[in-house]
Length: 267
Ligand SMILES: [Zn+2]
Image 1 (tube, rainbow, N blue to C red):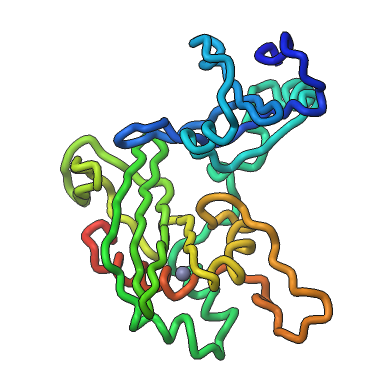
Image 2 (image 1 turned 90 degrees about the vertical axis):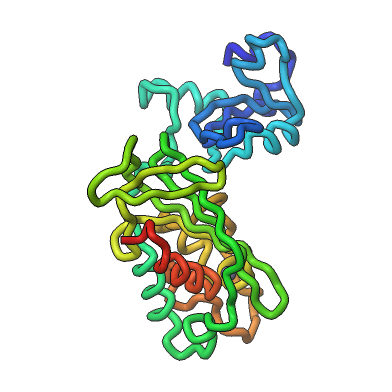
């Protein structure tokens, strides 16, 4: 609150935000929890205060820090949460503190079980071609981001899989695999498993967005921002997009998971 108390801004226009941000413009950017204050269209944090920058336009702040898992509080809620939790947040349910977790195999099976009679998805992965794969390890967060480029019928989609609780090691050793990442560095890690390693997934195709992303977000297997629930237009005769409200994956993620199966980092 100190950050904004000397500025004349009505309280209802001040929001305290907590979220995961990315180290700006870094070669191999770290992500970390951060708190900042939003007032109308400006963002402030204590570092800017210390540096004498004051504030930056919210748009620039979001572009630079790419925040995700954001939760906003009014100054009043913020004070209450601080008293109740005795720490500075985050206070919302974050990706790290989850109870339901899913592996790639589970998400694949969920999608199959939710749509057993489809002629698409699990039966249509063959024409999908995975063109290149980006490997981005975040050692401090014990995660590995893997982003693919999937070509299908002349369109390009970006399936993304984030492996969680990855065991990184300093050096090579027994049962340790090496990964040459996109930053040019070599990383050592315990092999990942399609069956057991928990993942977050996302794809920018309509099938994933409309059918799965909301339900994946509920069971904490969605990478990136939580979408709105997709409801049918009232009176529509179209079948519900996902009648069993199941998490899952699209054919691009399925093909991507198949492609990863052949890589050395999957045990
Ligand atoms: Zn997709």
